[in-house]
Amino acid sequence: MRLIARALLLVALFAIALPLPLDAAPPADTPRTHIVQPGDTLFAIALRYQTTVTAIKQLNHLGESDIIQVGQKLLIPASASPTLTTARHIVQADESLYRIALQYGTTVRTLVQLNDLTNPNVIVPGQALVVPTNSNVVKPGVLIEPQIARQGGTLLIRIARAGLTKVTGTFGGKPITFTPSAGYWYALVGISRCAKIGTATLNLTLTDATGQTVAETTTLNIEATAFQVQHLKIPAGKTTLLDSTLQMRENAQFNALVNQFTPTRLWSGVWRQPLYGPVSSAFGTRRSYNGGPVGMCGHEGTDFDVDAGVPIYAPARGRVVFAGTTQVRGELTVIDHGVGVFSAYFHQSAIFVQAGQMVEPGMLIGKVGTTGLSTGPHLHWSVIVNGEYVDPLEWTSRVMP
Ligand SMILES: [Zn+2]
Image (cartoon, rainbow, N blue to C red):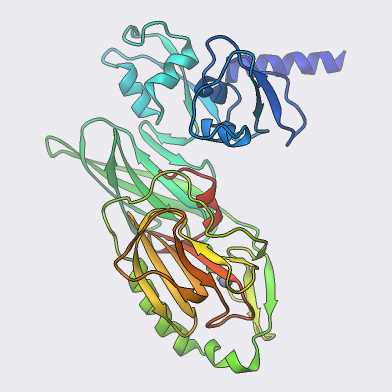
């Protein structure tokens, strides 16, 4: 009896939160299947199962094609994007579907599908619409992804309001730079791996076409990331590289490189990994060298345990801003991807690119080695956003922006 009541309650909750036909949830991590029905599109299926077109295409090896056929059996990724939530929006007097889509960081097409609208041009004031949001809507038209801000994570802040000519801001007291895009302004913000846990303030100044400015303040909660601890033994021949003066000097040179801001975003879509292999030291791992104290601020990248000579490929489009020898980072390549986003490759045995050169995703840029402060062949991969090292692997699983 109690079970039935609970099942009914669950059904009722789903009916309120997400009025879409949902199948009973299968066990976690088991791919579901979907038989293509008349009228189905990849987009509609992705929306229904709270996943993405890209994820369905990859799982089913569909390549570039969007074509599916009635009766075709598709594998659906298990809990690919469990964060899709919906909200209810009441249409106001001067609103269009386009304006509403902008405000919630979604598209007209999504709103049409979700609300089963026959004519997107006809919406009436007072009408209730279901709006999807993967973002944390902190204020109308101020959207932040992902929902949880964590140490070492990358935040995408979007200001989706019509008619803005300029957006400036700070996060945690540090200036952030906004870039105009189709219908919104965005900033990518790296959260330090040793950021203080708790609230951080986002200050925004929005300027409209008449020159009027509006200031907005909101706070975000920064959550802890559970970083591991690792004890490293540096061989006798390389202990001079642990010298703090030497490290500080090299860090200053590196920081000067990655704190530039190129206004054009050079990449699009999800990044690929520079190579594939076991991760021997995750991003942010707190480290102790030769029995010394564990560092307060952990590993600046992700280490892949692969053999010397393994090829390294560019993960995304960008321009090389440094390719050469350093003492601590060894043979080093730094790529500027635009809008304050950089990637870097440490300890290489060979470099195949030069400063100033453009690289495309998948282009061979170097080979794995153990040059600089390294205990054996591996690739150290760093991603830097707005001057902060962030978890590189987040960039291979999210579309930014
Ligand atoms: Zn490393």
